[in-house]
Length: 193
Image 1: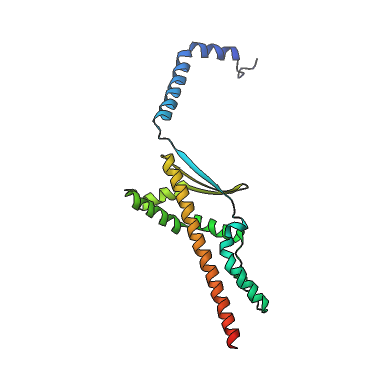
Image 2: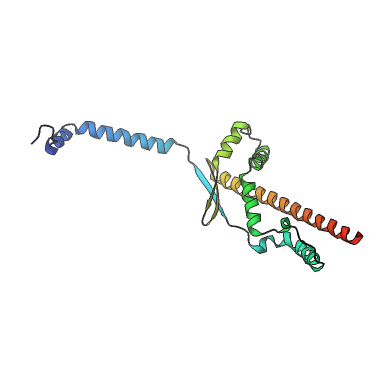
């Protein structure tokens, strides 16, 4: 055999002779892993999967609008495009609100004011914000929060979703109201003319 070839029999004999060292190193690694698993703080992940709204979910926003659209169309007035509130438009606005650093900060400040936490500073917000994850998947928008307390993580995910939902409804209500005021102005101009 060539001089640089490895003989498996010789290698096995070296391992057998040094079995105390091999077993000692394996035991130390095992103890280090066990100590880490025992001492490391647990990390819990709360996750919600959100689906786009159905037409029936936003009907309340479009009911008054559709009556006014029918009236305007009956007297042959062109409708502005910004008046349509579709489920997809509502969902996109909701996702933008969830991603908004301003809304997240507002939520962060509200929960730390309630809990009188000492972690309410800028560094606390950066950690809070980094713990939130948004991923758009085939089955919906995944919103998750990781933290040391599972119940708190779940409460924060639900609270952030709730706040984003309230902000989305407020913005859609305002858009519909602005559209209706525009229609009112157009109708008044027609009546005067």
